[in-house]
Amino acid sequence: MEIADLVASKVLDVPDFPKPGIMFKDLMPLFADGPSFAAAVDAIVAEQGADSFDVVAGIEARGFVIAAAIAYATGKGVVPVRKAGKLPRTTVAATYALEYGEATLEVHADAFMAGERVLVVDDVLATGGTAEATLSLVERAGGLVSGFSVVLELSFLKGRERLTGRPVHALLTV
Ligand code: AMP
Image (tube, rainbow, N blue to C red):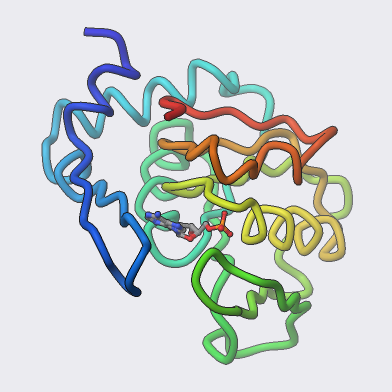
């Protein structure tokens, strides 16, 4: 099966979560199925190329799951991009608007060596605010963004337009 079809078969639409009017895309069935999860991780690695990045940054919380698997599969390290107040040492932070609400993300100021190539991953690309904030955080922390991959892109929210000039890749775009 094509990876896009596989992802489509493992996404559950949850209406009105976490707020009325939001159609939440639940990827837990994909994560919970071993062969499907492995296929998704392998497809991201194949698209990006294992030699194109030095470390993987995952966006809290579902991005952690994907980032850790990619990092392990490629022998790279993993860096968490976390919600405000969770990281114990000096951070760089960005506050931005979400499809639902507002959020602040942080990464440790010393998370990356200067010029280190960073693959950023998350589960869903919606409005692109989370990704935009994260990519700038990675750069402010000294990293070079080599790529940005998500499992699922919601094209009607135009996140890709917000990320013009960025290397955006999605396993499935709806
Ligand atoms: P955005 O900043 O609007 O691109 O939102 C992306 C972040 O919010 C990702 O970390 C997603 O996990 C989450 N998210 C936003 N909208 C949805 C949605 N409709 N279904 C699932 N996750 C979403």
